[in-house]
Length: 575
Image (cartoon, rainbow, N blue to C red; front, side, top):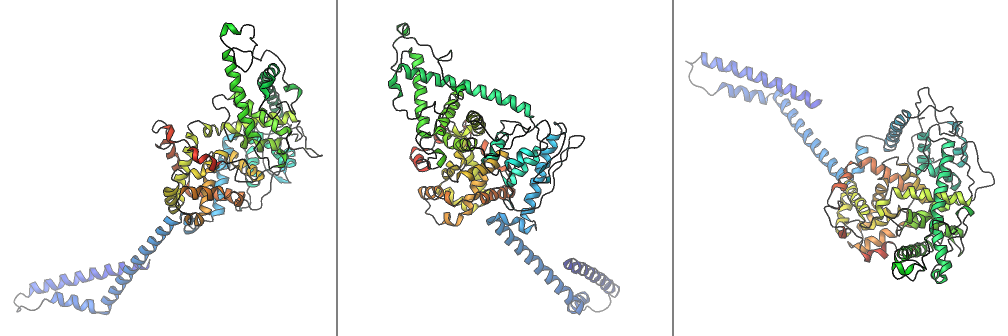
């Protein structure tokens, strides 16, 4: 404003000076007979500029020039600082980052609830969680989100307990009054323990719909139980018959797949088993050493035996340091074998891949956790006490739902993994160009994050922290399908000083990243990932799906495969 006033005064002075010059010029023309003298106009101009008025104008011009120059320098300094530290833009904008994060999350949930309310009937009643109103059911089915105290991610966490889940927010038909508010509560505080996760995880993974009634869930439970039992009886019956006819076929197997199995799943010789063809084997050519079956059936059985051997080897070395999976005759190990075998045979296009056993153990641990003496059972069918049979059924279908979102990670060409690694590279370039430049020289394909992506941080976190993180990822609350990438980048940026001091060699970077597992605070990691997404957005990572690096039609699949030399470094032995 001061510069503007100075310029206005300068403009007025200039106008006055022009007027004086014009008057002097007319006087000169009117007195042409006067002997030629030095220009009066120049004399007047000089006298004006040397006057107090002229000096004032000159000083004002100098001040304006200095102000403009200082402003340009300040702006350039800010741009340079933001280029090096993009996260500081909220400080310059005068925005409270935590409040802004809370506001964006609330906006996101309000949009979600607006969509849900258009397709759902009004609930018949409202209830409370821990004595606090969480929902209003209006005449037109609209839902309201109660304002919450603005806090940073993870601060004042109030986990959702099994008691809160089972006794609150349900209508008389066993339908959640407000699934959006419940999801928000889980996002802010997580589930309290295994008892709470038993009833919530089937919803989070999509096994049960959030707006389903108790009767609908009971019918689906029966269907899921019947389907799983049929699948298990099919392949276990084949093994039982092969072992009975050829006792030597048991050699090499350690686990008894019938350990802890329920009567409804126990195998028996029925129509599902492959027919014996001992008498007619000569009609179909020579028989295999697997048993008295023709060559085609023998090949199938041989493949089945090899698949079981691969699965059993991984099961026997997965999470054996966890007390729940210790012991040679542990029924949880046999349950894992049945679940993984059933998944592999039900999904032949994917089959079993290394790493699946890691993803299964948290699910088995949750659903087989004994219920306390006081179990919360209501008309909502959310009894936290599960039989071993129901625990296995729910664990299988939750595992199947989990892998539906991760199936691209287990493709033979590894295209899903490398697409996500490419997206990590793009996020890093936006978030920390200096660190991105270091990785471009030491690990341009970000193989150090391979295990993060494949196992969803399973090897880097304690099992309880893994469960907390997975709940956030399953919610898809911040950015569906991408949040784990921002968490991965956030973990690297949090250790940027240490990484930048490493030798610019791949082995050094890989060993350092593999060794940070014991230092990760899951709540801080989630908060950093959420804030990183708020700062950089996710529109740019869509470029990775169309780039040459991730498009199988543009690049040979052999270029994407993880080198064998890296496999032992990345996975090693199971902890």
